[in-house]
Amino acid sequence: MIKQSTFSKCGKHHKDIVLIGKNIGKLCMQCITDLLAAQENSCPSIQDAVLLPENISNLFIRQLEDQSKKNTEILMKIKIYLANWKSYISKEIDKIIDKIDNQIYQINDTIKGIARTFLKMEETVQFSAAWGNIKSKLFKYSDLSNDIVQSVFLLQQKQQELYEDVISNTGLYTTNDIIEALEELNKYANQNDEEQQNQQIFEQLLDKSVFQEDLCRAIAFSQDCSIMISGHVSNKIKIYNFKNEEIKFNQELSEHTNIVQCLHFMKHFNQFVSGSFDKTIRIWSFDNSQSIWYCQEILREHISAIQCMIMNENEDFIISGSRDNSIKFWSKGQRWTCIQTLTNHDAWVSNLSLNHSQNQLISCQAWGDKLLVYQLDSNSKLWILKQTIITTFGYSLCFIDDGQFVYQPKGIDVLHIYQVEEGTKKYKKAEELQLNSISESYDNFNMQFIKENSQLIHKSGKCLYLTRIENNEFILEQQIKFETEYIVGAITINGRYFVTYDDKNKGFQVRKNIK
Image (cartoon, rainbow, N blue to C red):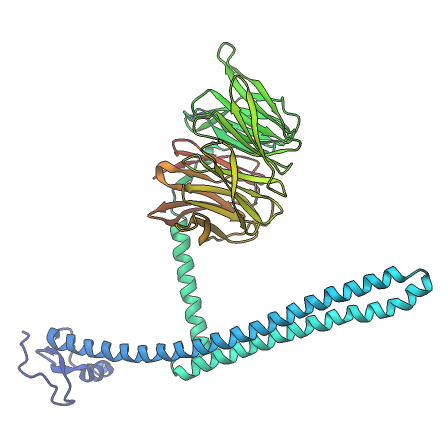
């Protein structure tokens, strides 16, 4: 039977009693330590002991307060050291930048001098004599570069010294302790990220894959999800019935004379549009009497390959981007007519996106460093360049809403998120979404944003990502890994199926939404 103690202090150590029991009496923390140490010598068991809540709570609170005080003091020390470190590093970096600027100036000045020397040479003998002087000037570049490398190396050494100084002065951990702790933390964080990103939203239906050796460049679905079309390097468009999760070949269209690069299936009409490297856009319609698809109209205005193409919500407007560096706007009347051409890009137009209000257009270019934002003028009904954003070049972008869009640069493992600023009404990069792969080669995957469930499907390197956007927060929900960077794909309008093609498997893979 356990009794309540009437004493608050241990008679032996004069410390707060935290345990009391029939066979062991009243124990403080020191008593417990001694008891556990002697457990092998058949000392009384503490299994019958019970915690005294009022004493143990007070003890733990005091211990927590003491530990908090110590931690605060340590963190303040680290803060002071880091502030000093930051100031020192900033000054040293400024010095290195000055050296680099000076080297650039010297290189340019030397090149000009060499050019003047070449212009003065009239005979081979003169060239031979001058070559020694030219080499000596060129070798100075190496000396300058070595000087900068040495400066950076010394800065790194100083960083390590300051780092060790911070650690030693806190008096708690060694460098290896912290490195090991950080590695464990990163390992846990990465495992947690992978678990979150690999939640199965779309599950692959392995028995539904369809082999397709003809390299695919684009995929699109009809409004009712019963038809899938694909564009190919062989100049062909292939039409499939998509029913009961199965892809069955129906018809092949061969009118294009070069790669079929982009496709758009209309929602309101039984038609689709294709863009090709043969410089044409074609409108395809369905003949009910013969149950076949045929080319109804050909649009010819571009002077190079059609690279990307989108339509407005009413589907009476086509916007096309080309490798002739232009963007063209086509209006539907009795026939489709080009009504405006934009020539602000200085490289081929790689991707386009319209906002939900249909009054802003964004575009990016390959082998360039800019995104362009266009605004539809309400009076003239013409598109006007509103903003030029200088950034790393990439192949894919997509509006999320009227004030936000995303952009995937090449060679970077992050997705850029741009938001409009209230004051200037211009877009500015607001944040970055960290990804696990980098695009190193040409990217032909078009981002898709499904407004109904606020889900973005995007690609970087050898991975496809499904990201949910909730309360302006981007949450990676699933990551699908491939063995290649060449991936194209499309999701059905209802969001139930996701079909991809890659050049490693050479086939269509069907994934089903299981959420």
